[in-house]
Length: 272
Length: 290
Image (cartoon, rainbow over all chains, first blue to last red):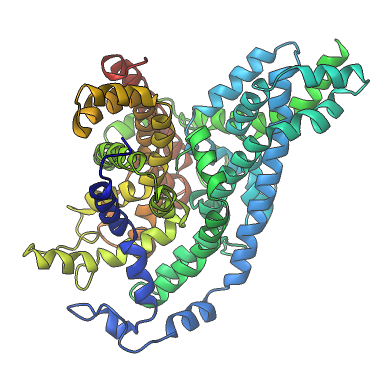
């Protein structure tokens, strides 16, 4: 295959890539235009006068840093909680026999197949009854528990050879020590995949934060950005600036950790 | 109980408590509420099948299911596109990562931001899409303000957003196809197009099936785009463009008719189960497990 010409393939892929990135390029060009210029027909390609007005409007109307802190804080809580809880349970399901193990695991699998909307009314009721509306824990807590994460970690532990475990046990280590010092470090690729997927989901989620942040305090980025759109419906440069600023942190992390992102998606196929 | 079993219970305790309190119990309560009238304040009353009867006669519900079904079918058109692109990327040796990164950018962009950018592109008066169409002499439209077009406009964005994920999953599937199969067929004089249809597609079919299942489940739950492009700006096209999850949100969390909202959610669950079961049945005729 290597001897065949590849330039026609590159040509097709370049065309497709251009179509993929046009929206982003258009967004970035718009950010530096003035509001009247954006409404002109036909549209101008490059900004006529280079304006930073959009960023000024965005940062002066939206508490970006507090939204960023809320998004980051709930992501860290959610990821840390889920990784620990799922790894512990996944290890027991894979390696420690106990009565009722199959039934309990079946329950986890059943919940895995239920769409998330089926939980929202009950989760909202719990959050409200505990007085947690508009708080950081409300954003993070449901996502700290995940049938999916448990399933993924169980798979990872099942794929490890039993030899190390036995050696450590003969040395007198208790099951927690075996788990923590011997087995967990060997699941690093899966831990990384789970971290990336959970983080991506937490960062992007709109529906749950929308439901549990009724007052608008402690809003994460997606909810705040949706509010900005309601407020500045036609001030496109400001909207594009807000969309850009709020998206950059995760895009930056992705560019640093591409391999982990791709591995995470390939290993699990989580979607949406 | 053995000591090892006691340890195991300690290990599964946090996950089990969380699962029961935050998933199993809410699921059961949604099920129960779907048979109740739940006022925003005060106690709920059992009303039997009333919510479901009302739902079956509610034009808005039927429209929402119709919109979600149309959206799902349209987004599925992105899968053949993803298969072709994944196969093309697999053929080149240089630049693979660059292509994958570019196609993946929409996945790591906030969906809210994606909705904002596309709403601007779709603008009927000075949007980029209408301008580009005018080069080819095609009349522009109000893509998101005109309810005749909204679902199609959303589906184009949905395909664009999902492509990166599909490419990664399909790419992993392609790498599992032995190179020898291609070499043998090249010796037999098969060209690229022939190889694509006779080797790549059949041997990749388990991955294609997996991607299809995921795409359908995600598409039936579409919410973000409609919230951003229509609801957050009070666009009147919203009335005829609601998807099923959007309608659920509106009933349960805006109008606080949680009983009715719960019934919609239960019907959504049934629809997703039927759609998935149907695909598992259909796979027998097209998925090839070598």
